[in-house]
Image: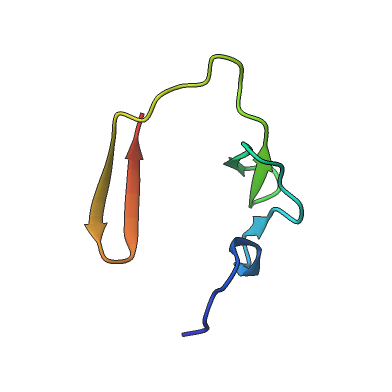
Length: 60
């Protein structure tokens, strides 16, 4: 398994220069995770669930 040091090292992530406060979202058309400013009002994370040592699920 390759060592991943940066989020942008992942093949399905394109966040070359995110700004402070940006969120990562799935762009289905591009097939990539990208960064953008969060929507006004945003949302809150209800809970984080760790299914295994490698997986984290976010419940909104």
